[in-house]
Picture (cartoon, rainbow, N blue to C red):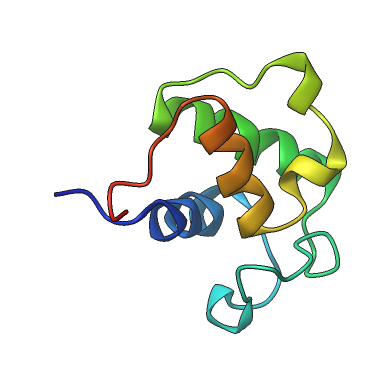
Length: 87
């Protein structure tokens, strides 16, 4: 059984997000940009998420808000068909 979606997102964020502080202090609704997610790191994060979840973000989701929080990323992934296996 796979880990819940937000745990998997955190794993990708840890490796591709280049955040300054630890991920443990970041809540699911925390602003990732305020936590140090740069535009360059956002692109790296998007590419890593596409690889891990075997999806492609459509143009309509390629905006800052999509990658603003773990909740927002989970919502975007759900919108393109990624299921939370813990649900």
